[in-house]
Structures are given as structure tokens and as C-alpha cells.
Length: 162
Image (spheres, rainbow, N blue to C red):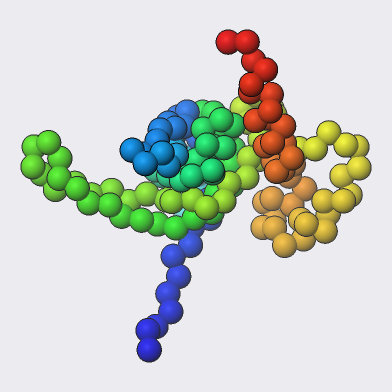
């Protein structure tokens, strides 16, 4: 019997570059972008506060890739869920190359650099309180992008004259 394992990644950070949306030869959407996460701590000897930034390569597929390509921009704060995946290939110089990336299956836009949160337009925010009880503490009370907001953004994109 196989032993169970877990490959789960949850990140909150800011996009380091605009998403790159492209399509495979079979027509499947794939979107890649960078994410920066920060960690800060005080040294054990009571010294100065230190900070370290980690940079992650993120990949989304299919419909989520299209949504990321349309809605995300450099600087946006997002919550991502997915799994780690390592790819290997040979470069043009015949050298073996290897990269580890986070393949996401869930994305929540927390807020953008421009201040857009993607939250609902209604004044009654108490309806979301029940949904937020199971969220991590950092996300409780945050305005998040809803499926309706995604559909609304997709509808508006066709009306833009340029």
C-alpha cells in the first residue's frame, strides 16, 4: 500500500512582473508570472530586525490562466494555492536545465497597487462573515475577487475601444 504524501503550497505576495499569457499548440492557455513573498524576524541576540524576500515562479493553466492574464498586474497582492512542480529540459547548448515552479489551482486577488480590491459593490458586507471564518487570519475581512466580478470584468473587456 502506498504511503500518502502532500504537495500543497499557499502563498500571499505581490506580483513581480505582469503575467505572460500564451497558448499551447493544442489551444490550452498557460500563464506565468513572478511572485515575491517577504519574511521578517528579529535575531535571537536582540539585534536588528532582518528581512528576506523569496521569489517564486508561478504557472496557471486553462481558464485560471486566462483569468490571471486578464486581471493581474505587476504589484497586485494575491493569495495563491497550488503545488510544487520541477521541470527538466535540455537547453540550446545541450546543458541540462531544471526549474521548480508553483502550479496554481486557486487565486484570490486581495488588492492591487492601484487600490482595486475586486470586492462586491454592495454596502452589506456581513454576508461574507460566514465565509471568512475558515480563512487564514491574514485573509479575514479582506475584500476578495468574486466569480461575479470576474464575469463582469470579462464582459467589460469587449467594450474597450482600443
